[in-house]
Length: 182
Ligand SMILES: [Zn+2]
Image (cartoon, rainbow, N blue to C red; front, top):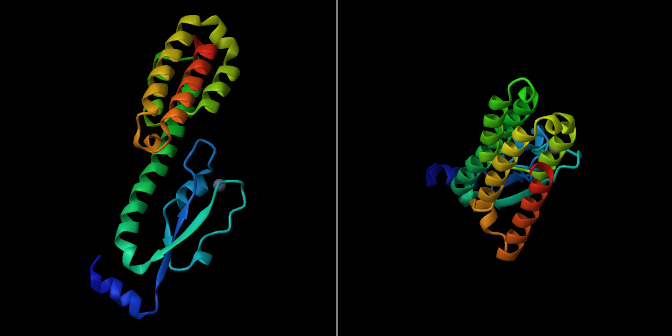
């Protein structure tokens, strides 16, 4: 985007743009994920969603449009990765009992994108009977979750957390995974 285009916007009286933010996590709905990073010339252009997902619409100057577009691209990537992670995780749950090897590989791929403890807890609960009769598989899955869990906290998005908080959170999750699977 050239300076000329920005100046053109400015001539049209456009001084600000707005960007839509949600929190990319396991519980954010797909519709809100699709809005993450979107840019509009008027905040009223964004749908009014009252579904409990976090929602913030922040203004920026017309001159910052190129960098915000780049930011929007990264935000969209993150949101799309979350949708892909859900697809992999859901598929893993679906095939777990008839094709456990495939399920382990899918859980591993999903965990490579991100791992959320509430989903791990729900899985342990929903498949309790199956895991009781397949202790070895349960153990292997626990190892996969542990490995992905420890990788999670090395990712850039967690690097901004205070060190102590990160370590405590990591240990807490590790304990929980052991409790449930090992
Ligand atoms: Zn939502």
